[in-house]
Length: 281
Image (cartoon, rainbow, N blue to C red; front, side, top):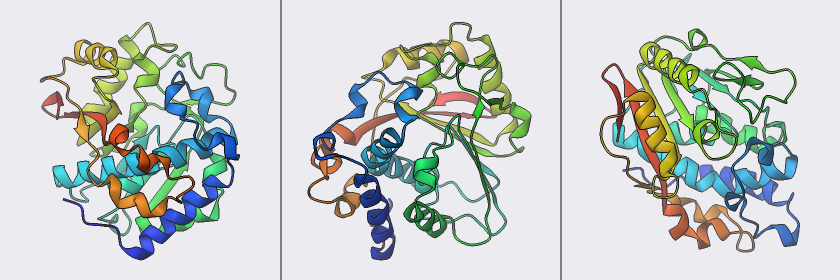
């Protein structure tokens, strides 16, 4: 079980969230972008990126932090986040155990997330979580599978991310990205390339962890993946243990992610792929 964040780390979290909050108007602060159709276009603007980071930070970091603690995953190779967004999955994964010096950490996304990544408070927090000497790189403009998915096919200067660009033996994190490919909005209709891409990644990686929309709200995503990949077991919804640890980082005026904690506690369905195949955990 993860312990409460240290005061200095929580202060850095607070700095990032307050910077995000400054980009809201008073009327927008209660807007819940999770009620919108889940499309990449929601996160292409500066306000969209600020809202997403502010709204989902506690949930995402708590979920990935708890998942790593549950799996007891060591620093045993490269870590690659695909659909990395504002790096909250990586912050959660390394929150309690920093990368080893020289460890390869890669982040890929179809967007640059420049509005967030340009904030000094973001860089201070990310540096604190990753520590010194890590081989970290963030690359935007990358997509999978081939051909380019409908939600992003209109964007310029995109480059396909082939499985062989992912280092052998990696831990691959897929945070809330597959819903954009098999969900209700602009779904990929020919899923054979997606299956091939995911299977090739699984065979190269040490483990592939998929965290996505809760199965009791988005059953179609998981039933599609179950058939597509032959996933063993039954999907279930997990609790974001530790989400309340981040309550002090939210201001009282804009602390609605914590006030609505009951809605955010049951957040994820988790799927693991490794040498033994795919299964729900």
